[in-house]
Structures are given as structure tokens and as C-alpha cells.
Amino acid sequence: MNMSFEFSEKYDLLSQLDDEQIKHLVTVKVKKGEIIYHQGDAPTGVYHVKNGHIGLITFAPNGNETLLRVFGPNYFFGHRSLISNEDYHATTMALVDSELIFIPSSDFDNIVHAKPNILMHVAQVLAKELRRAENKFRDLANSNVTSRIIQALAFIKTRYPDHKWTRKEIGEYCGAKTETVSRVLGRLEKEGLIVKEGRGIVIPSIEKLYERAEELDE
Image 1 (spheres, rainbow, N blue to C red):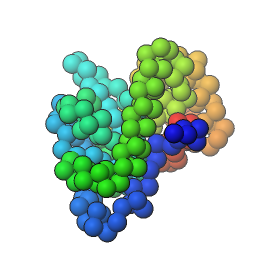
Image 2: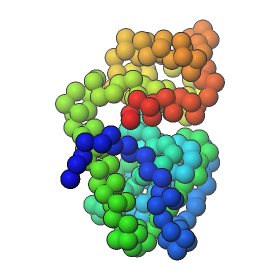
Image 3: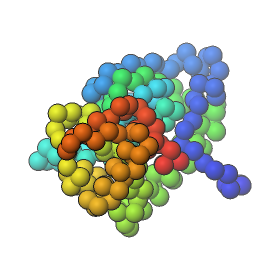
Image 4: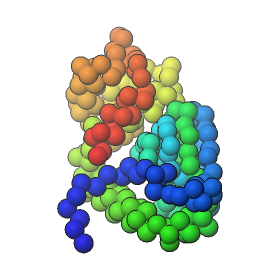
């Protein structure tokens, strides 16, 4: 099998299904800050982002939270736990108002049997996620640090808009050095994606910030 093509984690699900298969899909609208599923819940199906952005978050026993990654339009999530038959290892939250497609587990089985290319895509996504995890374990600081900083900045500004986040705090949140955070913030300011007001940071468009992070993850 020739695997030399450029693989993208994005997948236009609806264009791959016929009318009968689409009938079994469930459209879910979630507001910013709404939880889709909690860490420890049992999976009941697979989610696909139609529009918006969903954060994958873990919570430590002391209440501290860590943003693992962000799923944008045309991304699957919740697939790993369903396939491995394990409880969710993290919580998913809508970072902006979003619209999702939910595929119940029984319908997902039927769909991938009829459309094996979907299962192949999910398998490739799992392989890329494994490589990403291995890279982070090997060297956290070099694992697409710019994307992590951007995602963390957008996330914490959404969750805690009134807090004046320091570069050190942002770095601690996503596992990046303070000087690296400073460089990335400087670049984002030049690109017009953030505006610095004294010690504070203003984000004109959260969506554009997430889209910039997605470009780096491609």
C-alpha cells in the first residue's frame, strides 16, 4: 500500500455517506463551556466536529487542568476509547459554540463495515496520535510547541477571561519555556492574532487563533 501521500486528520464525513447512513447520525449543538463527556465516562459512540472547536482536557486530583489538544471542524474525537473499549481518559468541552455529529457505537460498526475507508482513516488518526504522544514523551519542549502555546492561550483566555496571564503561567500550563512563550506571543502580535494591552492580552478572534494552531498541526 502506498502511504506516501500527505495525510490529514480532517475528514469530510457527510460527503462519504449515503442518505440511509446519514439518517442514523445525531446532530448535537453545544454552547461554549458545555461538557460533551467527562473523564471516566463509558463511550457510547464517536463524535465528529461539524463546526466549532472542542478541547480535550484532563483534571488532576488537586483540580489543576491541562489542555491536551483541540479538535476543529472535520475532526473525529472519542474514537480511541470506543475502539479500545475503555472509559474516556479525559474530558471534552466546547471551547466555542459548536455543532457535532454523533455516531452511536452500533451505527459506527455498520458504517465502517460498509465504508472501510472511514475505518482506515480512523486507524491512521490513531497512528498519528500515537506518534504525537511518543514525541511528547521523548521531548515535550519540541513537540509542536507553537501550536500548544496557541491552543493553551486561546483556551485559558476563554475559561478565565479576567485573569492577566503571565508568560510563565502560560508556559506552565502547556509545558513550554517562558522565553518560547514570549517569542510565540510576539509572532502572534505581528500576525494580528493578539493585541497586547499593558500586561493583558486581547484576542480579537478565538476562532482564528484555533485555526492558526490547526495549520501548524497539519
